[in-house]
Amino acid sequence: MTDPAERNREAILASPSLVLAEQDTDFLARPELRPVRMQLELLKPEMALVEHEVRSTIVVFGGTRICERAEAEQNLRAAKAAAAAEPGNALLARAVARAERLLAKSGYYDAARRFTRLVSELGQRDAERHYVVVTGGGPGIMEAANRGAFDAGAKSVGLNIMLPAEQRPNPYITPELCFQFHYFALRKLHFLLRAKALVVFPGGFGTLDELTDTLTLRQTRRMQPIPIVMFGRAYWEQVLDFQFLADEGVIEDEDLELFQYAETAEEAMAVITRFHDRAETK
Image 1 (cartoon, rainbow, N blue to C red):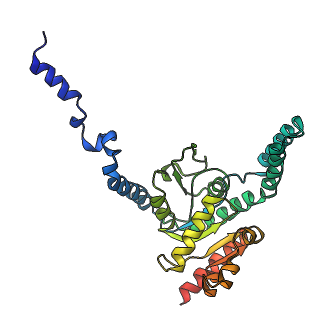
Image 2 (image 1 turned 90 degrees about the vertical axis):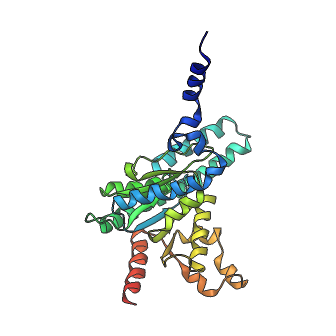
Image 3 (image 1 turned 90 degrees about the horizontal axis):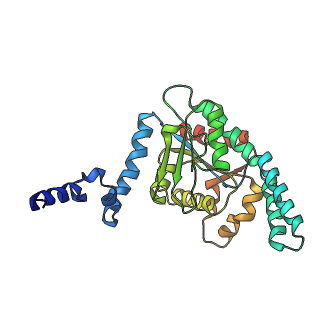
């Protein structure tokens, strides 16, 4: 028969309470530890960005479904084939129309890629890194933005978020600067802490959330002055009628000056350059 004290010793050694708190993932996942987890999500990226001498950033938002032309064309062919197999299926016909619209926007992928190559070549000429591209780390416009920095041989940041549908980091992020977040609030904080500009390409709910959050912070002067560049005027003026908000009196007329539009990478660069040139001369 096993000695009771020996059985108890084995129970002690197997007990979770014996695990160091910092190594006890079940303990760290408890609701009471949320403040600690939030602090860790603040500190981990912050310390890495400091170590990599990231002084300032350019944040790029945009839709996950806007892809390169070749991929968009392939998606359209697949949608047409599915619709042809079931001529009376309204949902499949709708999928064809949506695929056509996404193909029409595939040029934004190329524009995002070109824009971030330009800013990376400008800001990362030496060890002290400025204008480092930051995205949400996923596919679509985010991939294009990280890819432009990758083309330039420059570092870029990906701030991924844990979602019910798995989001894989795109393959163009600097490995040491690819982070995973649980809390949207901490992720948003890191997007804007070092930002020198926000460039927003066409996108959906996530893009709208990030855009309006930044506009609110600028409107209320709760963050540093930065240019907000909305890429694709025709798209954004249909999605968001800011002039209507001003006419209705729910925002000020001067709030319309918080953002500008651009159609090319060069125009977006010019907006950012003019903004900071004026700031330096004040």
